[in-house]
Image (cartoon, rainbow, N blue to C red; front, side, top):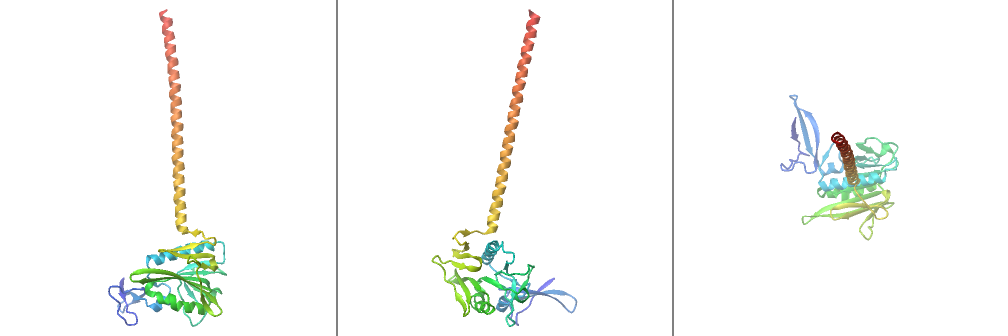
Length: 287
């Protein structure tokens, strides 16, 4: 099927990078019956209010941070059957004049059901995210650090955390900004002496260390990436199995060697007895 790039709002896309934010696809049938796949570049407005099926572009660090948070937070709420962590799932608000957003991470409590949401509807589910975390992409930074601060406060998201990333003189800078909703609007969270932010709904500390996003529990213990932990545990378990198999093989080899030695010793005894019998027989014949 032929792919056709469709200009956005009449604008001609950059030929070198026609999809800087991503794209949206639709199949259109031409008058001659030929089907073409139309690919429309996303705009900043599309990033702010995405549609299901949009292809949004993120860098490796963005995805690494999101995956780490998803794994850590999912483990933190694992014992709460009415809670869920969503990654890159649209949230449609009950506020009629505000279109849906697509938070990087949403933590939601008081669920009545669990389904495979592509869009989480506050109105249908009768609950909303208690915590939203956005990992800033430098090219769309204003949507997270300005626009969404206003929007999430309007819809009543109690906690909003921003992992801010921006370039300064060619170097990537990273900072944490957190907000808690008050009757007067969002109030910025104060970090502790180490620069960590306390994330109350999930009871963790959030920190930036060099190029890594790091979580700590209530007592200050590092919370590792559970996927890495599981992988290491699997590797260690496999190593133990291999070591046990090797030890069993060595034990079996020792048993077999001991059996051979016993058989050889028995054979020598039998041979020596046979020689004595022959010698006695020979002496009787010659006497």
